Image: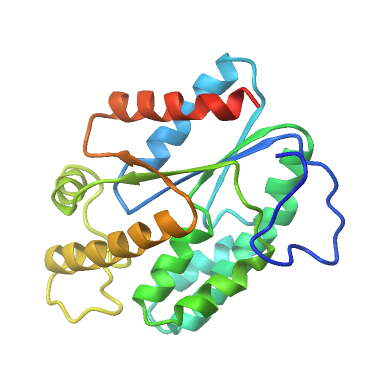
Amino acid sequence: MTKPQYYGAGLPYKKIGDLPGKLIVLEGTDGVGRSTQIQLLKRWLEKSGYAVSDTGLRRSPLTQAGLEEAKNGTTLTPLTISLFYATDFADRLENQIIPALKAGFFVLSDRYFYSIVARDVVRGINPQWARDIYGFALIPDTIFYLKADVDTLVTRIVHGRGFDYWESGMDILNQDNLYDSFRHYQECMIAQFDQMAKEYNFQTIDANRSTHDVNESIKALLQPVLQK
């Protein structure tokens, strides 16, 4: 990325200039292994001589505490939560992502605004409205979509951190247990990601495989970006 490109009007109040760095996004459902792949990629790129910065949802100092507090309760509406996440994204874009790209860093993003849009739409928010909010977002250099079947996700969650209220969509689904709710919610999320994969030109990677195999696929697909 040299001349920044946006999904809409960009940041009209801020002149960005050239961005010699690269923005690499990993997307996918809960439990698919994004965070693990981000850490593996970061180590690999740093060993290859690249400066690397990483970011992800809820990491803005402006909103992090508030978002964590909001997740501890169930009083906020889907629209309020949506705008909260949009604020988090905007602050990180302006104060973390763009400065790092300007300095020539490879920025690895554990999810981007696509995950937020998917969550919003599943919760009943108008799909076009949810997308239009992010007209200020930079178009990444590449977007990897880690896609795994629900059965694979369930197995990893059961043998990992366990089911989570929000990752199971318990705030919107009328299921009486976390297991059934998780399956239904993740199926809805996968449907949204599949639609956006075509819309935003995701590179889909089979994440049902081992961590090593997924990582090798990502590195192979990343080669054209490294060579630009």
